[in-house]
Length: 295
Image 1 (tube, rainbow, N blue to C red):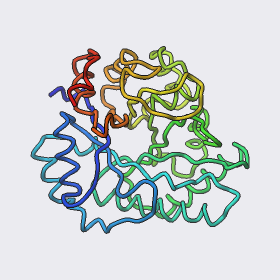
Image 2: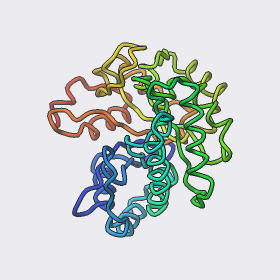
Image 3: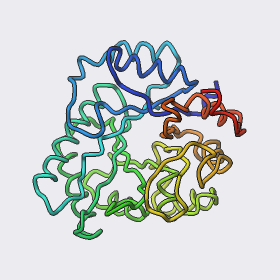
């Protein structure tokens, strides 16, 4: 397996095997990395990490040869650091993210992807200020220095912050501990935000000039159901969206991104995971129009 080709997908963390099951699911798709949520992304319920089979999962990782430094965690959607209009929501977001950082550290995972937040009507300037304030509160006394918070590029749906590279740069420039921040680049999101993702080199050049490629910790590899600039955030299976397989493949195989884990978050088809077929196509650099028939 090409060690410079780091490709995986979102996998479940569910009973009875939990983290061991996550590792085995990723391996069954031909992946050499993966992404998990440490609990349901839509709510705050969390099992104690001692119950999640972490040690057995780590043993399976080591046996498989998968690099544990490439494994990704994603923070739940309910965290909104950008809400300046509701103090209790902001406080909940800060407290929950503090706990999530510790949970991720318990897994030995080094990257936690986070949606920057939404300003919920207060305006982008206020939203950015609130996100910076929240991150400062989260990181002020956090000792999990190995865990990097990767701010995700967003589609701009509703009042989302992060649909411009400049938003991410502003946050990084103004937090007290910028060394704890990285970035997650999502191909569907930036297309929906208005970037012309078909111009791969130009997009990466702009990212590098505004944010810096050294900050890039993970790429979310998704096609989009929407036209460029729609600001809707609806993922599609590779080759069935407006971005197209060829463009997606260019990001996955780009030499500037060779060291960066790429994670598929494409939707299930006919209630079945598409990842084995999509990973195989990306490895072969060839789209198979009949891949859905093989599920």
